[in-house]
Length: 368
Length: 198
Picture 1 (cartoon, rainbow over the protein chains, first blue to last red):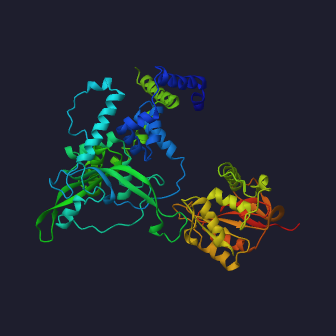
Picture 2: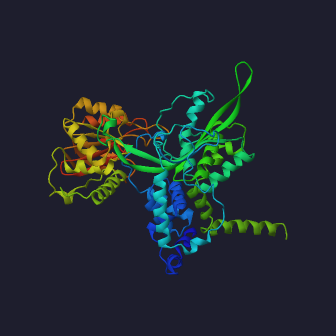
């Protein structure tokens, strides 16, 4: 009986899908996938990041299909991702090799290599630009040509591919606790579901594919009092990372046979969080812990919030919700949270009927 | 050789799945491919099953005189890596394998853990011929009453399989492939008995 409701309505469902298509194209305006790729950078980056699939083209297509609905676009791209065969694993990437486009530090004014502002909304007035209503192809071309000439004229010789890390400076001064390198193979959260307690690798994976809004909100909560983090952005980088793979059938695993397969744009954040530690001689000393955040594309808020949550989950022991890995990790995933909320729309006729029945019975028995 | 990587392996996968859920069923995985050019180092059916089961996420191990060549062939087509026996997800035992090495294969192959018994190896064994002539009686899940089969191969595997599967749910699952591309499966749940001579 319970299945009657589920099976029925085939024609109504088909009509609903038709209606959806109609809504998308009724105004007879077409949006090119190429246009989305070229102009919706923030959105494409978010969809790629939350879907854990780096393809600007497919993300743009998902955005087009979902009419700009983020959770739907992420759902589509995640579903597509799950059908793809996994042929190769890239070599471990050192972010020192990043081709930097933007790099700032809130901790030190003079960092080796300098602060590089790059492209950012941070320094703009948040005023609506009504000129964009009538932006023309010609004005765009003129602006571009002029900009490129000036840009070349002022660019000079900083090597953007080998900028030192700010964190190395603190390490040299011994202000950071010594940590040994951990070379254990990380557990892939897309292949094995989370088991608590998690490893740091698993946490970072879940955080980096978390919904931007959810990661930002929880990161904010961790600073505001539902956590105990007071971070300073040690370094924030946006740039491109080169990726290489080993020779697929060469058993010798020789690095010189590696193939370069392309580059991905990422945002990387290292936050410094001061903590007080009890030393052997009963003296309290200030030390720094590091929170790490990284995500596909340029999404600085998410990367910073991620670094806060990483630190919170790694070192937090005071019982705040943002230090509870089950609370954070199980709720920030876009597909999981939106999926569960959406399932409430599915027919619950039978379960609801039974609740109604017992309510009616209780009322009757109590003589109302 | 004409080979459709998507459709041929899909069909082979359905066949293997069917045979695994109905132990004792013998089906042909390459009947339409009899005209295909023979491969240099291994039978088409073995190659097809490797193409179906292997990818970059799993490791395999081959036992037999030509294991290196065949391993290279499998690796080149599937991007799967040849590994040591205790790490292999799929173990191929070719027809000319030495008895001592067959013993080693069953002894060392992954049996899974009590928590994750599915993390065990599948052993794919090349045999001379598979038929329904009564030799072994099979019983267990997926078989209504009993099934009779005849497996023409070195009989060593039967004792070794029994030893490997003694601690259920730990154990290994087996796939047999014969020279005519017939395929039969023995999951770890199937019990074997010699047929009674009537």
